[in-house]
Image 1 (cartoon, rainbow, N blue to C red):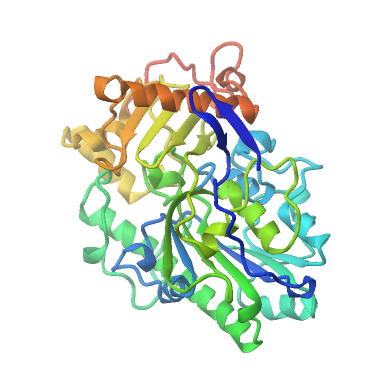
Image 2 (tube, rainbow, N blue to C red):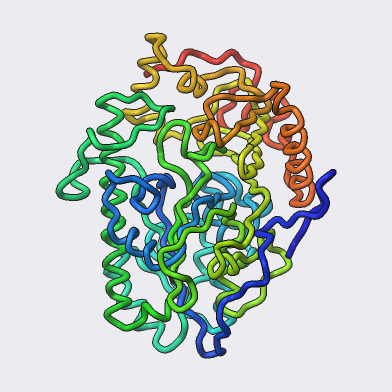
Length: 464
C-alpha cells in the first residue's frame, strides 16, 4: 500500500486502511468477469438505492440489493475525461498528463485493460470513451452500441474472462422530452437548496431523471443478457458515475455534489446481498480493487489501494481522507480539496472570478432561474455563493451540519485547528503525488491561458 507521511498525523494510506479480510480463495481458472457501468453526469443522490423515491431506477436498485452500496464514495475530479482516465489509470488527474477536460491520455500510460489483458482477459469498451486514441488502443474491442453490442462482445470473448467498460452518455445534457414514457413528474423531483425551486428548474430536473431512467433500462437489458448466458454468477459488476449532476454548483466543482458518486458493487459468491458500506472510499482505489479481484498485482505507479476487504466486511475501516481536484473545464481553475468523515477543506487558487460553471450547466433552465433571481436580489445566501467574487482562498465545511456546503466556516475560531490539520494533510498529498503549482496555469501576463481574461479583471455582470 502506497503511504505518505503527514505532519502531526503519523503514517496514512492514500487508499483504504482496511483489515486483512479478503474474498474467498478462487482458482486460476475462476477469475471473475468484470463489467463496469459508468454514468455520464449523474449525482449520487439521484437513484432509488440512495434514497430518491421519485427517480425510476429499478434495475440499479435490484443490483444494489444483490451487493454492496457504498454510501461515501468519491471521485478524484468532477470532470468527465480526467475522471475516467484517473479511474482507469489508478493515478490522480494531475499525475496522468490529462488533467484538463478533453485532454487525451498521453502515450505510454497504461490503463486497466492493458493490465488485465496480460492476465488473459478479453477487454472491451462501449459508447463514450473520452480518453483518446492512446487509451482506446488498450482495449481489444469497441462498440458504439450498449446492450445491442453486448452479444458480439460476449461471443468474441468466448471462454476467456472478460473486462467490459460501459461508458453511457446518459444523463449528460442537452435534454429533450421523450427519453422515456411516461416521463417523470416535475412536481415529484428533489430540488437541492443551491438551486431555485421553481417550475423551470423542476422541469429541468425531471428531464435529467428521464435520462437516468433510460440508462437504467439499458443496464437492465445488459444484465438480462448475462443472465441468459448464465454468466451473471461469474461476473463482478460495478456501477458509478464519472462526476456529479450537470447543474450549477455540482458538476465540475469540488463540492460533494460534484465529486461524490454512487458506487454499487455486486460480486456473486463474494459480496453479501443488500448491504451498505459507510467508510470513505475513493475511486483512485477502484483499479487496484479490480486487479486484486482478477488475481493481478497492483503497479507501483498507482496512487490507490484495493478496497476488496470492504466487499466482504462492511466493518472494515475506510480511508481517513479522500482527495480531489478541479482543473480546466471550459475555463481554468486550480482547486484542491481534502475531505474527512465530517469536515472538508477546499483551497482555491484563482479567486478573482466566480466559480466557473460548466458550459452545459450554464445554458440550462436551472442556471437561468438562478441568474434571474440574482438580478432580482432574491437569491438565498447559499445560492448567492455561486456568484461570489472574489472567492475565498479557503473554504471549510462541517458536512454533518451542512451537507450541501452552503456555509463556509473558514476563519471561525471553532474550526481553526481542524482547518490547520486538513491543510497539512492536503499539503502532504500535494507533495507525495507531485501535484503542479497554481502558477503553471497562468500565462506570464497573468491571463487565463484559455480565455485570455486577466485574473485581476473586474467580473462583468452575468447575463441570464
